[in-house]
Image (cartoon, rainbow, N blue to C red; front, side, top):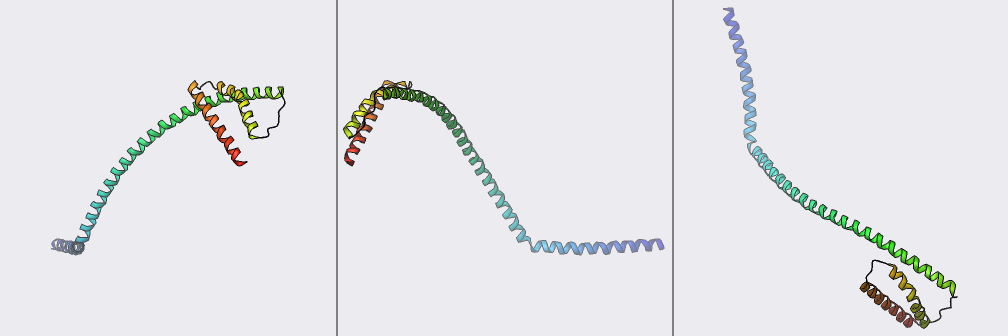
Length: 172
């Protein structure tokens, strides 16, 4: 008997523990049922957030593609600018050689004859005309220019000189 009584007491203890767990589980299930709508809203919000994240990822990918194309275009422009800078450096070097030649020619001309004072606009025009021959040597030293460019340069320069002389006359 004692053995069956021990089994009955152990069995009753396990039943009490099981009933206690069942009560706790029932309360939790009741809370879950009461908050079912909130849980559904949470699931819906999570679904919407996931959809927005997918859209954002797609927009980010398209933005990345656009930026990559811009970077490639910028690299092409960088290469073009580098080429133009190199060409500009060469042109500047040739122009500097021409300017030095003109300066040397002017210094030789200045030491050969004394300078006379320039008094009026007419004498300025005469001085410009006299210098024109000297400046032509500097322009011709610039080896990169062709004949049409030289003529255009001369026309522009003479127009600028005419404008300057006219402005000086109007000031007087």
